[in-house]
Length: 371
Image (cartoon, rainbow, N blue to C red; front, side):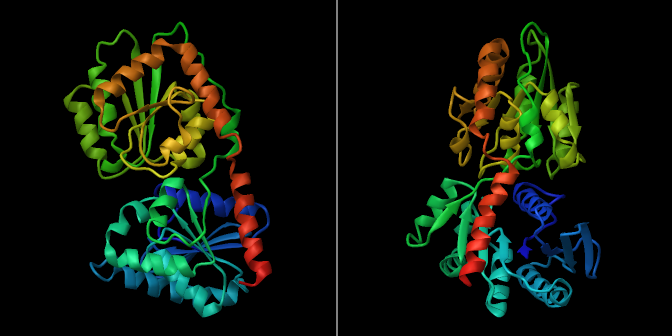
């Protein structure tokens, strides 16, 4: 039973990762039950995704200093409620090394079930700055049956504290349909589509993309920017466009992930100006779609993008470099095509089917060994 903190279809990377893993495992015949906070009011609820995959919600409200305790109590009560319905649980898998990890660890000890943790990014890069949570993480990491991170960067951060704990790196995956997309011909055109996909938060740095588009006003080619995502900066970004008369920007905040492939297909360049990342699923999807990419030289991005081979890496918050490289890729279509082809080739093995097989090997080894 994977334990996670938020409903995967509503938020970002870690939640989408856990949802994609669960849905693909269920298609292989494995029974998956997910426990998570409810957005449907103060009662228990359930959504049946398919015959093998169900999401169980528990009542949850955010109260300062009590949110963690309420989360843990909610999952424990929900677990006691659903065990008679779903039968024997063979593996507990916690996504995000905070409250879900603590809750999953307690359940695994109470029921004597193998326990797996996947760390996704901010839970390590940011939350470990809290000395209390850091100590809890280290205690549980040492006692988990399997510890996984989505990037080598996160693995090395953990290794600074606990060197004797084995850690496996398993990045996210891509739906196989993305690999069918081919490089768009960028020659002899005067109109180009730019794409940004991500939550509209400061850490994702979407504002700099609009600033770049503003500096490109009057450029000899016509540009359109599509921003797919929602978040606290949504209104601010819209106001920026209105104030600066950026009429070539389209905001799409309610796009289902199942419908997102068409926007990758229509785009010419993919932009990722994030200030912090693990191995972002949006980047993996852009690479699988054979898109020329401009991304910041940070975190797990550098484990995927090699500068001038399968994308362009720039320093964070370097507006002029972003502008210059947008022009550079548009004006050098042969290079753009080669970058896109190499990007797809780089992650050719990272389908969700392959990622699921990696996890299945872990689950099976734990069940067979009786750990």
